[in-house]
Length: 164
Image 1 (cartoon, rainbow, N blue to C red):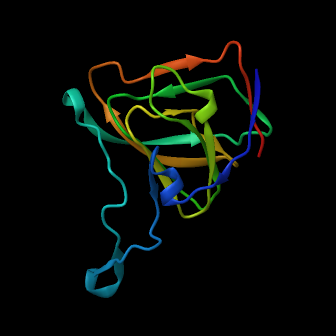
Image 2 (image 1 turned 45 degrees about the vertical axis):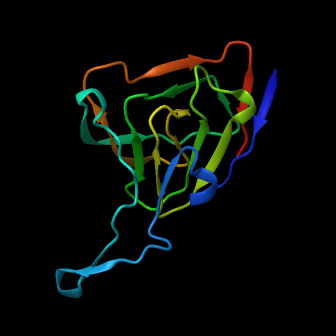
């Protein structure tokens, strides 16, 4: 079976099954620091405390991907959410499937995340690792702690291509 996936532009509605689009669009900020800054609150539902987990902040240094690319596996983190926020203005992609025992190939989607945005996967969402369109660092907020929080599914019979 061969399946070609073309990414679509992300918005809060079409990504809500998988998590949060981290964006300041349509969010009313509050003025802080004597008016020299604006604060945008509650942009993502970070969920990392299951089974005593704690929230950690890391930097992933991502390398540019080339397209079309073969998707040979997907992973999920059943015990915690995982947020990716680029540390410079860049476009990146995500490749996701709903929760389940294995990724449902008929429900796979890919999204284009434009500059000035990030994403936060809900716990248990199948996804391919970070897909960057250039060499760039990402701020990553996720879970550290006991328990099996990384499950990998390798595609052996399916040929899945991300065409961007």
